Image (tube, rainbow, N blue to C red; front, side, top):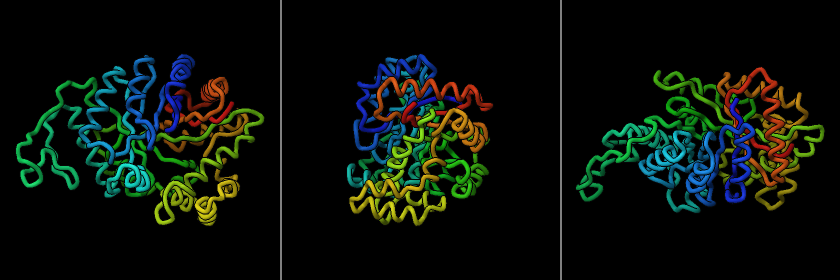
Length: 364
C-alpha cells in the first residue's frame, strides 16, 4: 500500500511544508492538495516539489470548470517537470454552489466535459498538434466561433512523461461509469467497502467493459479518517462532523451529491434529517444525527487490530489496487506524525503489504 495525506483547502501550506518533508522521511508516499475556493493548489504543489524528492504530488482536486482543458494539461506537464515525474492530476466537477457561486460559470455537462478534458490533456502530453472537435470544446476555434486565425499548435516542451496519471473525483453513476472507462483512477468519497457495490457496482462494471486495453487497471483512491489507539473512539464526533457538513451543507436541498450517496447506502431518512438540521443552522444536532454505524463504516478508527481489519476490507474492495487518501486535520504536528507511523506499522502488518493507500488522519 502507498501511504499518503490530503491537505485540505483552507490550510496554509507554509505551515505544513516542513512537516510534509519530515513525513516523506518516515514513509509518506503521496500528498494530495485540495483547492476548493481557497488558495490554488498548483502554487503549493510547486513549492512542495522543490522541497521533496520522492513524494508523489497530486491535486485533490482541480475543478474542471476553472481552467481550460489545455491550461490544465500545461499545468500538469509543468508540475510533472518540476517534480521529475512525480505528479498525479486529480480533477473533478465540484458543484454548482462553488462553480456558479464563486467562479461565475455555468455548472453544466460535468461528465461530458470531464471526458473531453482527459482526451485533450493526453493529446497535449503526447505533443500532438491539438485538434479537438467535441460537444463542449472546439480547438482551434472555427471562424464562426472566433476570428478564424487560430491554428493547431502543440506543446513547446516535450513533457517528462507522455502519460500523466489522471484521477477523477466522481459520485454520480454516469460520472463513475465514464471514470472507469477512461481515467487512471477513481476518487470517491464516503467510501464504504461493504456497500459501494450497491451504489456504483454496475457503473464500474459498465465503464470497465469499455476500457481501452492500453490503460492500466483502474485505481481507487479513498479517504477514510484515521485514529489508532485504545481511545480512538473519542474522535468519532470529528468523523460525524465531516459527514454532517457534506451531507447537510455541501450543496442545496435540490442537489447534493453527498446526500445522494448516503441515501443510496440506506441512510435516506438520516440524510434528510441531517440536511434539515444543518441548513436550519442547527449544526450540532446535525452532527449528532449522523449514525455511528455510518461513521465507523467509512473510517479507520479503533485499536491496531480493528484498523488492520478495516484496511484489509478496503484493500479487498479495490481488488488489490486501492489507494487511499489520508488528509490531515488541525491536531498537533507530533500527533499527525505519530499517526503516520502508527498507520505505517499497521499496513506493514497487513497481508495487503505496501499497495496503494492514503488516508485522512485525525489523531494517533
